[in-house]
Amino acid sequence: MPLEFVVLGSAQDGGVPQLGSSHPVSAAGGLVPTRTASSLAVLTEAGAVLLDVSPDIRHQLALLGESALAGLAITHGHMGHYAGLLQFGKEAANAQELPLIVTPSMLSFLEANQPWRDIVTSRLATMATASRVSLAGVQFELIPVPHRADYTDTVAISVEGSVLYLPDIDRWDAWPEAEAVIAAHELAFLDATFWSPDEVLGNRSVAEVPHPPVIDTLQRFSHLADRIVLTHLNHTNPVADPASPEAAEVVAAGFRIAADGMRFVV
Image (tube, rainbow, N blue to C red):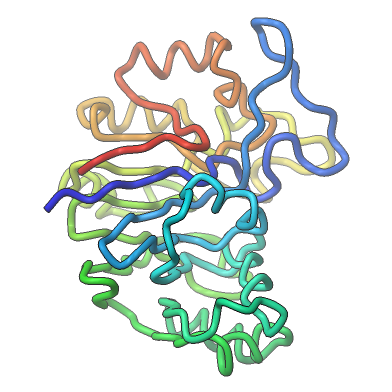
């Protein structure tokens, strides 16, 4: 049976615009569309399973209407991907015993630090796995990928072997299995944080926060373009503006650009 997927957020962890930054101006005039931190909802018969629990979760859940939550899954321990767990503490009346899928590394990090320890040990039904797990009648596979291991390891999440959610990775050439894994899925949401290695970040260089540039992704996976959706866009990435020449280049190459609220059935 086909599943429906809802893009809850399509930006890098800080959203668009980021805190302390002016709202980017669109090439078409006006402002670039607002984006919240990257997250994908899988709609099952039991309710929605969230892939990443972003700090914008309270606003993102409005996109799901009356759908109940059936579970949560986290790719890694960078701010935009797990900080929304705060909304499942004892202050939240309806969160108790909600299933949470994490890697053993992620669970160790959460259990070693408050307030996360109380949330994952007494509020959520946490499942630590290094590979596959079934939740709400759907099979999820955690696939290790190379990414800055500041606190935890990082995984991509495969849903029923047909949809891949991979918002963060350092470089495609650091993951030899990349092409085969993407090709094995009907739809793949891929890291598109930066447009190019020369992107200006203010007081940091792209080298300090490695992600594969979109221009590399377009060339490397051109033959898989029809199944790729670019997500996790930084506020400096011109692709975040649908009216930019860079966004037009992406679309002309056959790729899609995620936007908050987009829906897919696979």
